[in-house]
Image (cartoon, rainbow, N blue to C red; front, side, top):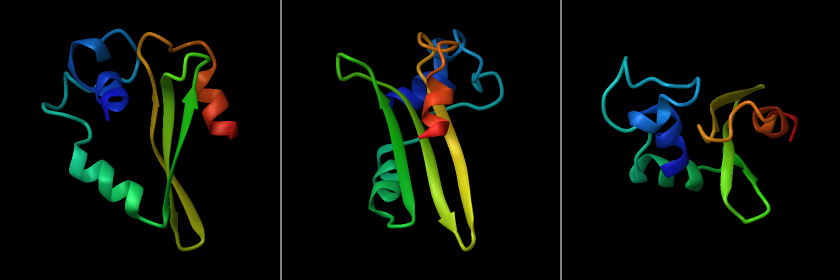
Length: 91
């Protein structure tokens, strides 16, 4: 949650390119929503973890019939432009 919210909303998001804070207020994802994602058998959240075990990237994947929905592709604003998003997508 902290990673996604830091990348999409608030002052920290302005560091990176995924900033939505100029369009939307509030958090991008809350505990209830994230818990629902993690409990849903059709949803997978892949994460990118650096050498210090810090999560610096993630992506939401959901099976919808014959399709795979990809959303919430997130890279820490401080780690963007280092290829993390590409690594997560290739996973």
